[in-house]
Length: 355
Image (tube, rainbow, N blue to C red):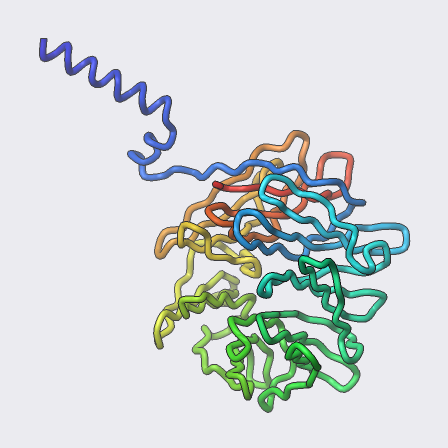
């Protein structure tokens, strides 16, 4: 009788494991997350994806450009919690240009717009769209950041490096520390806490704005490295991501500061770009990877010392599927990128994990 009971119990456990991949994976210690495909309205390929930002599960914006006979034309997609729709109501939607970084500022969405060679900020509020033109033209618009009470655009003109600051009513130019030759990117947590990564006469550096002055943040970057992104979180945690060259090989590094000390790790990501790294709803760091499968996208999850990988859904006849940007949307992760189907050029695609 006991032997029969043992056999029955074993059969029940085996069947439960077969019917429940999550339970089976928990026993094995590895459960690959499952991504689902989200339909995206068409654009004229090849499509360039620039940025993605979400404010909770019910609102997200994805930006980029499509390729028309006149050149690149801006594309904008809005997410309402259940579907992507294409938005063509913003100023300059039908004109040559590109859309870049998108940020949520209070109840508004702010988007950098390169329009007919000149830069401006698009602002989306409950009342519709408005624009904030830049005070002067720049040859290169490198990056953009916005928070309540402040916005920055960094780039260059014929006189050199420019940091343009907007306080809600007027633009001013902000000086940078001596020796800074170029700003690669900028991000901000508040009007008096912004970070930028720069090239200097002595190598890469991280700068910090304290509400009055830009200073060298004295971050102990790894030798022979660059900075690709800085992730600021409301808790005060800072994550810096980039690439380090050592022994003839480039490899990814992550630096995290939770108090006053920096901790550097080297997750097994090869030389993956970390420009799109985000903090997921599960508390781990996520970033899109170049996939080793032609018909699926690929994502990396870094949680402390553990790095795992997952793939998007299979796409029929795809020859390259590439997630470009990620954003946390409530309890889900959204991705946006491109999929190239055999015989066509890259068109927009989106995927979701959770939610």
